[in-house]
Length: 171
View (cartoon, rainbow, N blue to C red):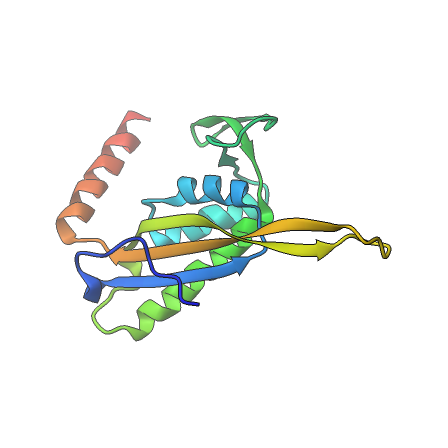
């Protein structure tokens, strides 16, 4: 079965798509990870996810945050958050796959790719047997993740650099 993308790029020749189907990860954690890296440059998102895996940074939990402890302000962020290693590793694999796809596509500069669309979708229920030979089963859900990377235009990059320089001068 083919899963169609829910996002249609305005410039498909400058876009790279990747999809992870039937991932055995928590849907609730993936929603927060996806929200945290949307709009980032691909390189920055990969570094951020590596830091989360190494417990140097955290994913802020905005949705499904009941019971999540508050983290100290790291990089100006604070509030409820967690370190979802498993989902970060899966999203990192998808981003690396997208980077390889971009290298083979002509006319795309991999250093200027931003995450224009990323979405986590619930998959079907999968039955797993409980341990020790019991007859009962668990119903677990799988997760699908769609990522679309687009090359950042020159004028957007100039505006973003100006904003970053203003932030640096204020601090």
